Image 1 (cartoon, rainbow, N blue to C red):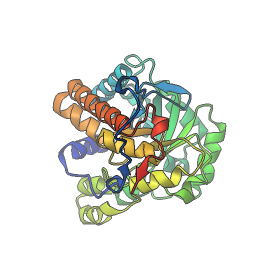
Image 2: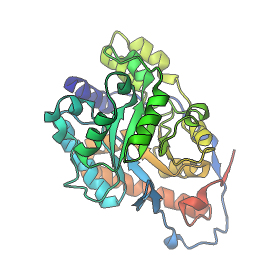
Image 3: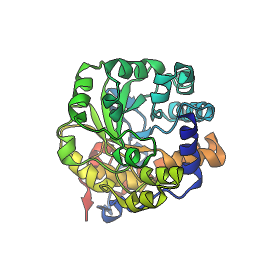
Length: 327
C-alpha cells in the first residue's frame, strides 16, 4: 500500500490526469457596473462545521502513509494555518492497519488552530471497518471532522480495488449518527447526485465533481494493463457545476471541488450554492514546483481573483454571492 501511495503522488505530479469540463464554463456571474460596495470592506470569512475560516477554502486530502507524505502534509497544514483555511489528510486506512505510519498524517504541531479533516474510504465499512476505526482516524490526528470518501470508479479499475459498495448508505448514516465529530461524505472526481445526497444524513457533502483529476485515469496509469479502460472512463461523472446545483437544493453545507482552479471558479461555485471550495491537485503541483512559496503564490492569486469577482458582483460576503448567475 505504501508503494501505491507513492504511485498516486508521482502520477498526479507527472501525468496529465485532468479530463473534461466542470460545467462552470457555462456559468456567468452577473456584472454590476455600479457595485455600490467598498472593495476593501469585502469579507471572505465563513463559518463551516462550527469553525471559523478566514477564507472559504479547504486544501483537500491528498496523501499519507509514506515517508514523503509527512513533509507534504506538514507543509500544506502549515500553509492552512497561515491563511486560516481548512486542511484534510489523505486516506488513513494504511495507518489504521499499520499504526507505525500514523506520524505521516500528524500535523497539529504546525497547525493547532485549523479545521482539520480525517479521511477514510467509505467502502471500508464493507471490509471490517466500523465506528472504532472511524474514531481512531479522528483521534490519530486530533481532527475536527471525518471525511468518508466515495471512489467506486477508482476501486473498480484499481487492480487491488475493493468493489463491494452494497448497503453503504445505511452504514454511513449509522456512523454519522454515532460519531461525536461531524461526518463529511465526499466523492473523488465523479460528483454526487441529488438522489444520493438526499439519502445521506451527514454534516456536509463534498461534491468533487467531474472536470478535474480523474482517479480512473490515475489507476489506469498505475495498472498499465487497465490504461485503455481508465481512458475510456475518464469522461465519466457529473460535472462539478451540476453536482453543486443539485446538492445545494438540500439543507446541508456543500463543499465545491473537482476542477476548481481559480478564484472565478470559486465565485461561480458560491453563486451556485456552495459554502466552501476544495482543491488538491493545483496545490500539490504548486508545492512540487516551489514548495511552500509556490502554495502561497497560488493562494494569494486565487484569493485576489475571488475578491475581484465578489467586488464586480456587488457582494460584500460569500453569502451575498449566492444566486448571482445567468447562463
